[in-house]
Image (cartoon, rainbow, N blue to C red):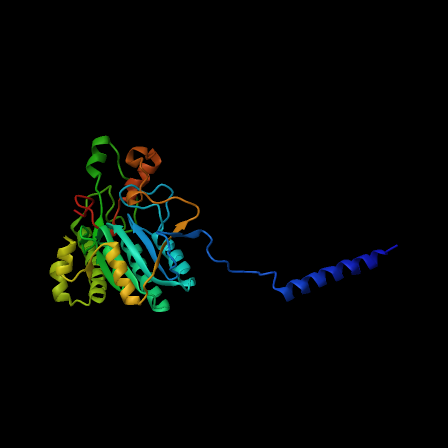
Length: 334
């Protein structure tokens, strides 16, 4: 009969022997920092024996860096574009077969900060990996989307792309007249005269406007500097082009705002020559959790589906918002 102490020694011996066996055979792998399992690679067309990859990464709709469940109508997307691109570039960086990145951009731009963060992430990726990045515009590559593209090695446009809108605006709406009509009074208490500047509940004073114009000029100067560096263009040449207008692809090419015009097949032919590789596999990444942002990051329900609480929050959010965003007839500073 086996005593209790003998049984404990037997169990301990089995555990020790099992651990040693696994260590010797390499059957156990403990990964304390597992890769992002949320993204899966999807082939865009049959590989046909190609092993080296070109990764298409879409940047679509409003460029923002806040993830919102339903998106904010007019001024916000539901996808954190910066976090998403971080994850995608990290996955590409881990794959030794990735030879180039194509940013498939179709966007009117977005917030100043999100556009700048995307631009910065692209530059860092290029510096750390030496993998070339190509910006490829779809229907629209305007304002913050154009700013983002300045981080790429080359900028391409499709023949029908609309490009440019170099500039910044402060989105602001005033509803003080409406409040008077419905008998609503704003009783906000602020610590200083300019603490509530840009509030939709009061008229904009000359001093308010002067301060906002200073902000616009500063952000505009940053945009000009990014384009100067990205396009290797002096400011005297750039300024006449950077009044906020958009250009057709041919106009943009003539002004030096893009490098080439073509279709995806033209870009891939160019890449094969540049990389010296005859066969390239075309892939993209998809979130395994599913879901994709809709146009401008909004739900299809639009304003009509917004609750009273959400509408009140929206009105308050329509304060001063710096944007690298092309919005014909949209919200502008008065």
